[in-house]
Image 1 (cartoon, helix red, strand yellow):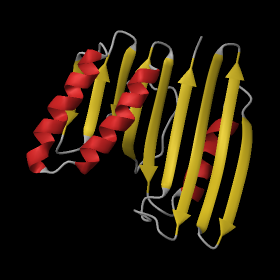
Image 2 (cartoon, one colour; image 1 turned 60 degrees about the horizontal axis):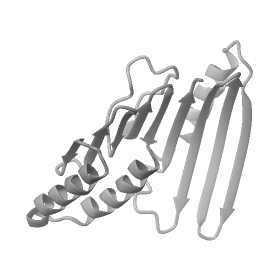
Image 3 (cartoon, one colour; image 1 turned 30 degrees about the horizontal axis):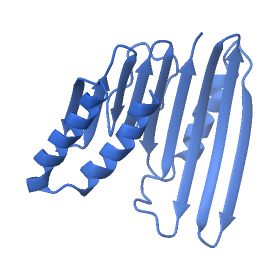
Length: 176
């Protein structure tokens, strides 16, 4: 799966640089490279920038996708899916929220984790300087071979590309 991750990073950079004439060339080249790595079910949507790969081990969607059916963690409304990774026993979902949603998301997961029978560890971090701010709240629950983490991040830099959507929620689950 490391090769898949490396290929996705390269693919995302290629697609970001593409214009209408070169989109087909980049798409075909990327599919050929991924197929040479043994990945045959590759779908690239150049209009949305969404890339999906399916293997016998699982699937990855970057630039969109949908939260998997039966996902064990609730998510607050108002999100945009930025990536989804699923494999046997493992799921990872990354969501984007609007600037200003950090506190509401933190309250949502504080209430949710507090209502669970299992014990959740919570850590927080906040850093501010002349370049911007970084706020983070993380919840982790481990039980045997199972692991769940929820990360609520907000990064606002003076030179942010999109300061309106600075909140990212990353949810990772793994069951052994």
